[in-house]
Image 1 (tube, rainbow, N blue to C red):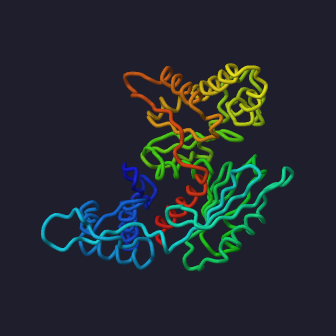
Image 2 (image 1 turned 90 degrees about the vertical axis):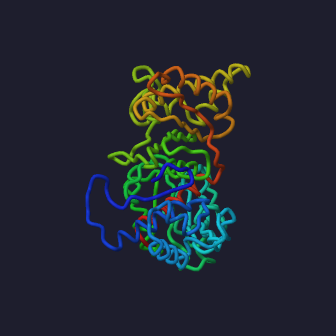
Image 3 (image 1 turned 90 degrees about the horizontal axis):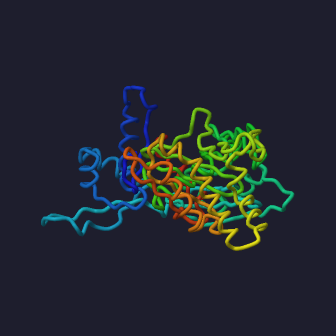
Amino acid sequence: MTSYANTISFPLHTPGRTTKASPADVRRNNRSLVFGLLFPNGQLSRADLGRQTGLSRVAISGVANSMLDEGLICESGFDVNASGKGKRGTLLSIDTSRLHIISVDLSQEHLVQGAVTDLLGTPQQRMEMALGPDNDINADMIVQLVDQLRTDIDADTIIGIGIAATGVVEDGVIRESTVLGWRNLDLRGMLERRFGFPVTISNDVVCSMLAERFFGHGDKSMLFIKIDRGIGAATLIDDVTVIGQNHAGGEIGHISLDPESGVLCPCGKRGCLETMVTSPVIRERIRRASTPEEQLDIIRSCGEQLAAALAMPIGLLDINDICVYGPPDIVNAAFLEATQRRVDMVSSSKFHKHTSVRRCQVGSDIALRGSAIDVVHHYIENGH
């Protein structure tokens, strides 16, 4: 991927592996370059695309015409800034009118949320399934939701199904999700057999990070923290998502800050961050506080505890952007200021410039939008 906030590209081969590029690889790479320069909100002429990619006029014309026919891009006016007396170039941009994604968010408590989105992840049609306190999400609910969402859409316009799920996800299999109560569930295989569309399943925090990267203020390298029923993280380094060897990268909630005398965590350790800094834990502590000042102190102490867990990855990865997503009654000014203050104390040095701690800029559809972008990523990468 490039370093620009409004671009995206997709590697064709495993890093470090050299392979001879086939004509199909070349076409796929050219399409990825062009799409990346336009996604999400770019507008460029064919000449501009040629200059920025280094591709010939013939190559740009071929890939652009193919993407126009496919519905990935559209012509969106003329280049009013072009110099000279010649014909103004026709601008190209992402087409949000023809292709669709079915996106499902499984990360919310007592709610399964789905949407039909465009290529920018913008919901065009929504559907929700509310769950009672004793109801658990199951695969049949997801099938029912997807089935209803696709009813009024031309199947030929659907490029895939995207699922944002809690827990450890490996190649479409939910290896472990304590929140959903699933273990080794091949959700992708089940949905692909049922519907015939490509299915992309990713951790909900990774999906949320993608949405913040392209539609918020995310840097090409950042730590994204999500505080909810649990606490999770996702890491982006030079626009590459860090998944981890066991597909469990981002399990910041189980970093132990007090392994000897802390509260026992369901993971088996004591003093894990998840026993201190989650929405239910913080709200219960605030409820028991006797004064507003004591409540404020609780919020501040939780921000400092988060900073303690962040200190090592900040120093190890040299990251300057920390984005925190969570309910506004918890991730408020006092929380962020306390986190920032402690991060400055433990990470600032002559080797590392200031790390900014900020609130996420994308709203309640963040996981839905991110899972849709994940589908687009895989669609472009796989050369459909």
